[in-house]
Amino acid sequence: MSASPSRPSPLHLSVALDGAGWHPAAWREPQARPRDLFTAEYWTDLVAEAERGLLDFVTFEDGLALQSSRRTEPDDRTDQVRGRLDAVLIAARVAPLTRHIGLVPTIVATHTEPFHISKAIATLDYVSTGRAGLRIRVSRRRHEAEHFGRRTIPPLGAEDLNTPAARELTDELFAEAADYVEVVRRLWDSWEDDAEIRDAATGRFIDRDKLHYIDFEGKHFSVKGPSITPRPPQGQPVVTALAHQSVPYRLVGRSTDIGYVTPHDSGQAEAIVAEIRAAQADAGRAEEPLHVFGDLVVFLDDTPGAAASRRERLDGLAGSPYTSDAKVFTGTPGQLADLLLAWQRAGLSGFRLRPGVIGHDLEAITRGLVPELQRRGAFRTTYEADTLRGLLGLSRPANRYATV
Image 1 (cartoon, one colour):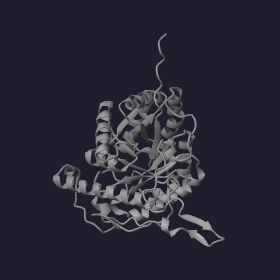
Image 2: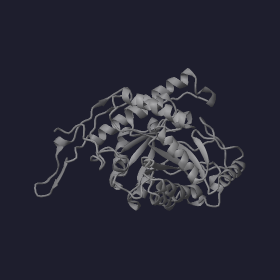
Image 3: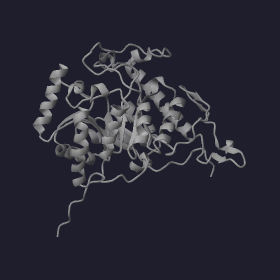
């Protein structure tokens, strides 16, 4: 009697939420809600739908300048979504209205202070009872730096991105981002878990010996600490980053719990995972869990032709074919399930899906893809943990400053 084929390991799934969707003409679709983009109800509805599909978490895009169709500079277009709400504040608003799904806002490290972000994400972890994370971003855009006036970034066009000057700037910004994450993590640990006594009878609210100076001194930051916010419920909220090449792969290997990568086939996926694992080992983290998620833009319909036709129609509205750093998938939920499971065999443990049109493709993920993966035994049928770290199979880390 032959053995039955083994079922795949369960996948982790997340969605990246941005405006009306990742296609620039998404806001013009009948299912889009362009008048609601700056309302709390809109974002609550999206996250509730993602939670209905049992997804691990959602990410919220953010930036420090208006969206642009150009890679390195602003544009003057008026036919695409411009403007956005603050990602951390969206997450904090949504948190009390959800129960299980993780909430991961984007943070631009280049122009923000790690002390501020550490307490913002710690607060989000409290508000969500242990479901917070962050996505760390760097910015080498001059027009974003000009909003702050604290640093000078040289003008770099798209044609300059592979020059020695651009590579030097990239190295510098990602080294700064690594220090940024280190400061944030130390601040999260600067309160021991039992630092708060809250004993009204004796008048002791806090044990000051269990608050610690972090005394971080580096090229980019000098931070004494401790934080003003007690240690988050997860101990360490989940740190994530998007990476496209070797320098950000090193940041993922050194500093994060999840790296999002953009392969276009399974061979690329395997090579990227190998490079990140090598960077992780070089950072002395070989024994620590580190997820590598594949990013894909998805247009999903019940028939492959419908998805392709929809994308072509949107391209016509936008005036040019849509391109992305990530692979753009058009097809059925079943075909996407095939692709995800093939890429899982290349070493990816999960995926972050970017809905081409949120009003259509988010439900296609939660009500089409998820049931298909469940039928194959490749995705959960119920939430099995109360925290984002728990959903991802990450233990609650010990506090680095606590004495045994």
